[in-house]
Image 1: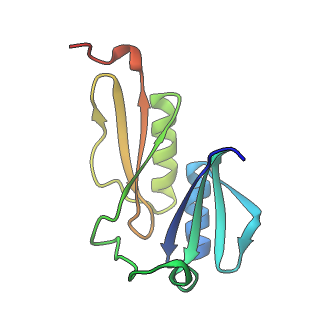
Image 2: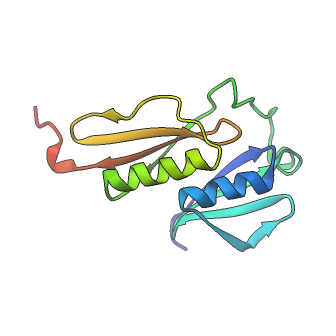
Image 3: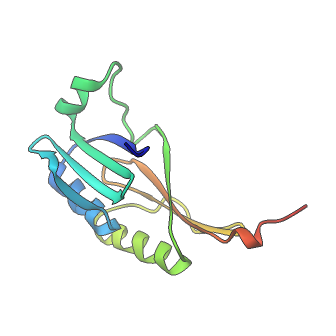
Length: 135
């Protein structure tokens, strides 16, 4: 089996969250989805499981963090161009997301940040490693 990444997120409104992630470019895998959780596919090896609080609690060993007011993690997705960064974040904003900061330009990398409806924070970035400083 290939190495894969599954990120599990507790969400308040499963359908609205599914719509948000679809706007970012994720697709739903119905094989691993039900009325309490949806498997959203970013790539062949990266998946986001959006889960109702009830379902999330069945896996959790700690209380669910309030990600609207506290940061629980930063999730970063690399894409092929700055245009793709902008398209993804703009689509997420149209689907109800929030952009907490302006685009950051590090010379070799451009990054925009978007929060989903529950405050989970995603950094969408393009990196041109040929522009990485050598000194």
